[in-house]
Image (cartoon, rainbow, N blue to C red; front, side):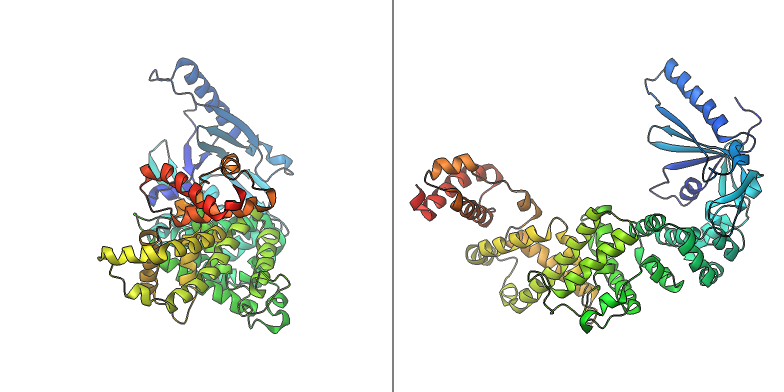
Length: 521
């Protein structure tokens, strides 16, 4: 339909394909040389509608649902650039953008282009943020194009740099340094020394503070914590001296009542060290056989970095007797930093808190476990009779205590355990920590029969059944009966096979409640 138009794909999709990444960018950016994005997108939309109507060229029944929208990307106040509209097309699960090659010029006080116009493909390449994002796939010639003559080389040598002079590039749009750090974390690439030097210029930090919203900054930070190596991102924030702008701590809170020796700088270093140790354990523990979801890892990375908040105040009482001074300081700073400053959701911050609090709880439990390890040392895993003795005498009680702890920690107990095992820098030994993790998980599962499934356990007898069993029960004591049933059910959870368990447990718990509460019969 447009034989004179050269159609290219640019940006992240080309980069990810060349890197053979498992997760390729879902956004496809088409670049046109002689047509506006909206013009070409309408032609594509009409073609797909015709294909749908005719059942497709192959006679198939697949239906393409296209939602076509036209937006002027960051140019809402630039009337002379209306012809450069970007068209966004939704085709199935793909977000497809159509843009015409363009140049951009900026004013000193804004990262939104003040001037834009039709340009050559070379100018379009050099306006982009990074050389690895300035590559194109030419659909007409079926070739990869590198107009900056740096992109392919930087991909090969795993280097991140800007296509033009880095300082002027960062001053035009300071968000580019956050994107560069994010790609470094996602791809395990190095920041080019010239780019790192430019980021150290005080004008870049000032420009970042003035031009980039906290929401946009928070989005890039969150992408770093979703990446394969968030530690690298934190390291680059420290090396470029942007860490205090990204995570603006209130030092007075850290030193409140002089209970914490931490300053902002010592916190950043402690958070980085904790994150490094945690990532090291995760890389050794979570294999193909045992994996953690991307979301739970994201919470773990945040928890590892922020766990040192309040360190040094662990033994100080707080206004709330149920929490320590450290927990109070940490919770306050977490919400201020992540919700107010970086605009993350309250729900996500609560999950991060639960991982940290779970780790602190498990640290105390591990110390108790270590002091009473003579029982474990006397156990021979190959001796079934020994395991039977432990089950008979100790397992039920340990299972109940463990169950109550898992209830408090929540579904991310494995992540909390890893964080707990990596929280002692003086005694941290990766192989020993991994052995301890496997030992504790094995003890929980195989010896006391405690697993994540137990948290989803439903009561054997419902309220009506309990009233029939104990007709004299009143509302005041009903909760005690429910708690007694819950404890009995947990303590005997592993005593029967799944097939025989339900009926057996129903009869046994009924007898247990009659015996324990005879005055309500």
